[in-house]
Image (cartoon, rainbow, N blue to C red; front, top):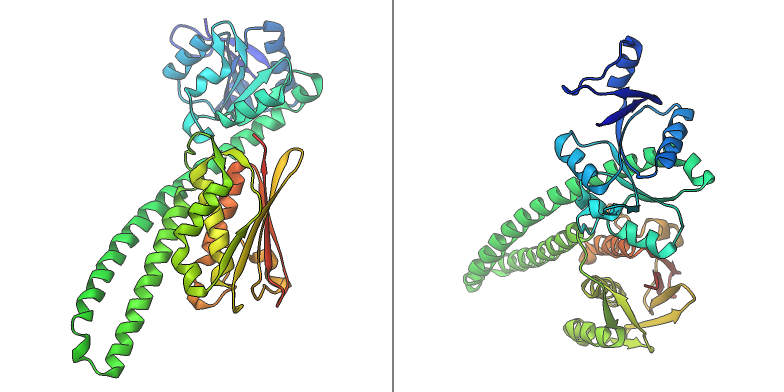
Length: 382
């Protein structure tokens, strides 16, 4: 028998699924309520959670089941709830079985909060990485906060879905722009066959068109990369950062040799991370330090300090620096702080910030005009 709870009052559903109550006021309130599926095998804990929501006067309709199998069956037979709260340890599995091996909250399909009787930092991190929106220990303090945390989980979930929709649209537009850019490149190459028939003015226009096409292609590639950050990350692996930096230096060899520059690295650690995104992070920062560098010999130095809980990286260049008033806007893609020749660079710095957000780290910078720029970023130890 499925049991629903309306504003803290138990209501029994009949076989047709309708609620047995004659109180028109409660029926009116029910329409406005959010649906909560509670998966908890301990009735005393379930009752405590219901009372917490009731005492908070939260507008919830609570459906209670006692196992993972019952929970999955409920999800199949009913409209998706606004929130699922599940005990971590249940008779037939764990609350994470509901995520079906998801790698992000969006992949789960609904906002999920996990409950546990014993707090564990390792379990909390694992739960959040597996798609749970929150992790709550069953003590009086955290349970009192449960209605508020439930509202926050739903709000954060909606923001994630909106962001995913925007990212999907961005990738569609970026791919269309990529196709258009390829057509423009083909047209430019065709026009170059007739360059000898043009006068100096015409050849100047053709050179400008070629430069604009190259800039558009670079910007399109950056937009595509930006749309992909935040999607499903690959599994962690051990990455030797000195070897990775050698690979990056090789990829940037044309730029380094063309500017007469140098990339210097101290002794970097081997860390557990997503290699493809770590490379994207470093290559963007190093590329930025070389391109914006007006020194006779551009130099970018990469170092790392191993701290108790984090790796603190520093990417320093000997360039011209950034005005202090612009530091707060450096990671905002709509801001143009750089010359036209470097259009799209603020987008690449936005990519760096998104990668660090997914890593659970931070990024910031220090800079003074004429004294170069230093980017700092931290990554939690895994």
